[in-house]
Length: 59
Image 1 (spheres, one colour):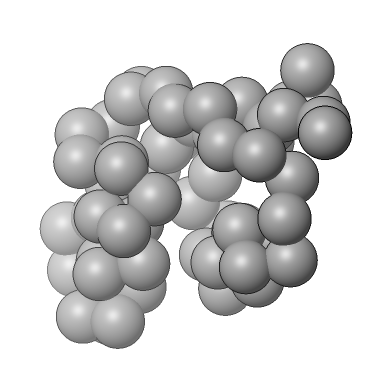
Image 2 (cartoon, rainbow, N blue to C red; image 1 turned 180 degrees about the horizontal axis):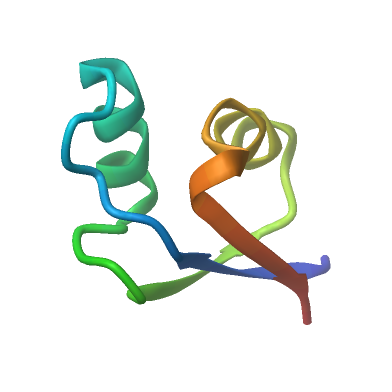
């Protein structure tokens, strides 16, 4: 299965509470934090919701 490297590139300060919760659910707490997840439909949906805050690379 393909993996995704997800980086939080913008701050969560002042964002909608559900967007902050989605970032935290992905494991992203601070700006420039990086996590790797499997490329599943659930993860893609979370990425789509907050795509304006993220940089996503396929590994």
